[in-house]
Length: 262
Image 1 (tube, rainbow, N blue to C red):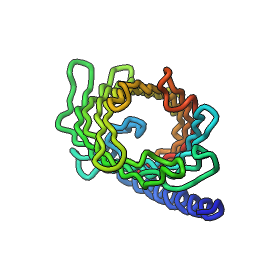
Image 2 (image 1 turned 135 degrees about the vertical axis):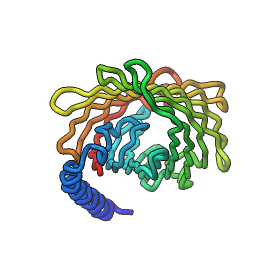
Image 3 (image 1 turned 90 degrees about the vertical axis):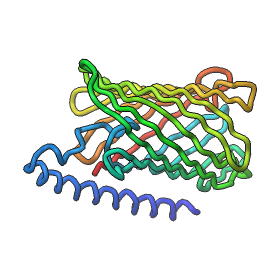
């Protein structure tokens, strides 16, 4: 796929989701008259356990000890019902990991999240979550793209909301391959999300995977995100990423995204 075609497709995607978000915003103004029960509780979609409907158009650049990855992807979610959330990601890479510039689709991720229970204990709100990732690799490893491995990843987590409006979300997930290259990884993840004045937010996302297939390597990483809500249905953000330790998958990275919320 050449660059002009990619640009045209990207513009079409952004235009479509922008129009949908603006239409949803007009509808929301009408629904507000009928009461707050129609709203999505003002939850931030940067919390993977939030009950929201959104589509983010994102780009991340990763530096891998002299090589590079430009990851262009869609990252979104919708509520099938009050107990079940569906998330999706579609990744397209441009990279020189093979020694020359290559570009193609990397993976498709579908995630189902079931919320068995939520409530309030003392002053702390909580929401329990159980889920499963299905990861389809597009078999482009000869281009330096992807892992050439189809995987499933069951996980469990809890979202904790404190009186300061801070959200703390610990998660644990195990990834195992069912075709292609062997993957056997347990990942521990903690997300801290804090709203800021002027409709801004900051998120810290720390990940510690244990790679059981490769001498128990620990390719840890951390991501810091700073975002701003422009309207009820549109937001933007920037990301800073860093790999941690000798087993890190990348050295550093930056990214940006635009969020359309329905």
